Amino acid sequence: MSTIEVVGAQVDTRHFINGNRVASAETFLDTSPIDGTVLGEIARGGQTEVNLAVAAAKAAFPAWAGLGPQGRGVLLHKLADLVEENLETLAQLETFDNGSLLRSHRRGVMPRVALNIRFFADWAMNELKHEVFETRGHSNNISWDPSGVAALITPWNAPLMLATWKIGPALAAGDTVVLKPAEWTPLSASFFADLTKQAGIPDGVFNVVQGFGKEAGAALVAHPDIARISFTGSVPTAKTIARAAADNLTPCSFELGGKSPCIVFEDADLDLAAELAVEQYDNAGQVCLSGTRILVHEAVADEFAARFRERAAKLKQGDPRDPETDIGPQIHQVHFDRIKGFVDRAVAGGANIVMGGEPNSELGGLFFRPTLVKDPQPGSEIVTAEIFGPVLCMQTFKTDDEAVAMANGTEFGLAAVVVSGNRQHAEQITKQLVAGTIWVNCFFVRDLRAPFGGSKKSGVGREGGTWSFDFYADVKNTVVSPNGWKE
Ligand code: NAD
View (tube, rainbow, N blue to C red):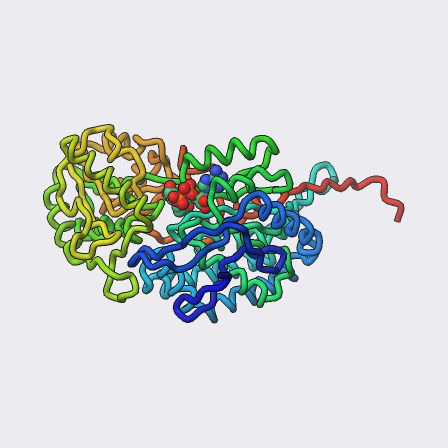
C-alpha cells in the first residue's frame, strides 16, 4: 500500500526522492497515539534510499544555488502559501500522528510552519548584511554562499514545526535537503513533500527518506556527500551522530534535550508563577524547553503549591481533537513506560506525589496524569534526567545563591523560567543562569530573529535569524585589493 487516507487527505507513505515516490522492500507500522489505530505502513529506508536521495540532492544543488535568494524566495513563498491553504489538513494529520492538541496546531503550530519558510526566505533576500570592511584600501566582502546537501534529522514531538525550522533556512541559503523524520511521526513530512512539488521546487531540491534512526538516519549522517547535519533530538543520539560525522568532518548543529528550571522567587506574583508552572505541561510535557524543575523559595512554597494545584485541577485530559482538551496522550507505549518508570522509582526512593503520579485509568491507553513530585532525593534521576512527559518536580531553596546553584546543577542548559516581581533581582539572577533561552515572567515567547539553542549538553550551536545562515551557508570573505586593475 503506497497511499493512505487520513482525515480525508491522501498521504503517500513512500519516500520522496528526486520528485518521485520511491518504495522500499520493507515497511513499518505507524499508529496513532490517540487510540492505537494503525494509520499505515511506511516505507522503511536504509543505505540504498539514502544514497539515492543524497545523489538527487547533490545533482539538484548547482541549479538551486544558482537561483539566488530572490529566485528561491519566490518558490519558498509559494510553498508557504500552500501550507496555509492546507493548514487544516496538516493540523489534523499531525494530531492523528503525534497526539498533540488540534487547537494548538490550528492556532499556533501550523501557522508557524508557514512562517518558518517565509521568514527565512525573506531573511536571505533582505536581512543578511553583506558588510564590507576596509583594510588599508582592501575591501573584505562578506557573503553567505550555499554549502551543498543538508541532512536534517527531526524528532516526533513537534514534527513539521521542527522540520521546517531547518528546511526554511537550509533551502533559503541555497542548500538542497534530505529530511529523515522521526519514525513515530512520518506523515506530515510526507504530505509536505507533495506541497514542495506543487510549489514548483525543482526535483531533487527537497527529499524525504522515511525509516528508523539506526538505519536511514545512521546512513544519512555518515554519507560523505553531506555538507551539513542539523539534528534535533536526544543527547545520546547526538553523540552517535557526532561520531559518524567526525569521519567526514561534517559540521553539525545540535538542538538537544533539557531539564530546565522554573524558579519562583519570594517576590514573585504567585498567580503568575502558578500559571507559568502549569504551562509546563504543554504538549503533555513533551517539550524540550519545559521548565520541569519547579524551584520555589521556601517562604512561599506552600502558597505557591496551593495555587498551582488549584490551576492544575482545571486541566482537562482527553482526546486532543476536542477543543476543550488541555493534555493529550503520550506519543508511544515505549515512551509512556519510560515516564511511568521515572515516577515509580522516585516514589520508591521516598519522593511524595502531590498530584497525579499514575496513568489515567479512566482514559486508558497512553494518557498519563499530569504529575507533581515533591521532596525528591537530591541528585536523584527525577531531578537530573529529562523525562519528556507531564511530570514536574518541586524543590525549595532559601537563598538566591542556592537557587542559582540548583538551576545550573544539571548537565543541561536549554532554557530557564524566572518569576520575580523585581526587575533588578531578575536581572541579577538571569546573568548567572547558564541556558540558551531565559524567560522572565513569561514562557514560550520567541522571535525568529533571535538565536535559539542550548548550552552545555543541550546543544551545539545556535539557529535563528542570521545564526541559521552562519550554519547552513558557507560564510565567505572575499578580499579585493585596490591594486592590479587594468581598466
Ligand atoms: P531521538 O534522539 O531518539 O530521535 C531523534 C531523531 O533521530 C529521530 O528521527 C530518530 O530516528 C533519529 N535517530 C536515532 N538514532 C539515530 C542515529 N544513530 N543516526 C541518525 N539519526 C538517528 O529523540 P526523540 O525521542 O525523537 O526526541 C526527543 C528528544 O528531542 C528529547 O531529548 C527532546 O528534548 C529533544 N528535542 C529537542 C529540541 C530542541 O530544540 N532543543 C526540540 C524538540 C525535541
